[in-house]
Length: 255
Image (tube, rainbow, N blue to C red):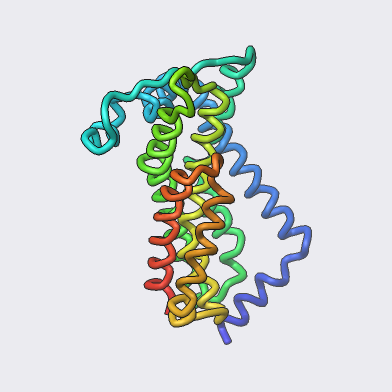
């Protein structure tokens, strides 16, 4: 009864009251993002050389660890072919780094907005889901940066359809693949959390996921083909393996 009274009191807030709360939440998110955006904009020359261009350098840690497996030295030229590309890349990279950094705060603001409408027992189940979703997003971004993108980039940068063709990668091409693959991997790693939420709603259970595992493999291959920017078989394989591992993780998480 006490829970119902608390929730009823929250529901008495008018539509405009809820809208005002949401407006201030968006303003706070925008302000925090702007602060990080300004900071990254100032620091981007150092971050760009050491972090963003890391997978294009022969001394990238993954290439050193797998030197015997990946062959000899790796070298590729990143060139700029547009007057505005370096400036727009400076801005866009600062924005995406700020967005990734602020992601936990966005989750926190969402939690603040919806938590008053939840029963205490609902809060206990939703709070861990928010924490897990944040952790999985960062883990996905890390896998994208440390494994998926470097493997994909090196394979494609070294691939030659003819010996007389030299690969020179444009800045725009590099950045579009870099940002897309890392951000998409962060979102893809939310799949186990989504599966657990859908399972809690009674849409399926662990036995259902086990029963349709073979069908899921086909669906995951299609999903990998959709989210990979290049669509080549090697990239498809590199992305499909983490997706399948996430599916197995989802089986362990649902009841």
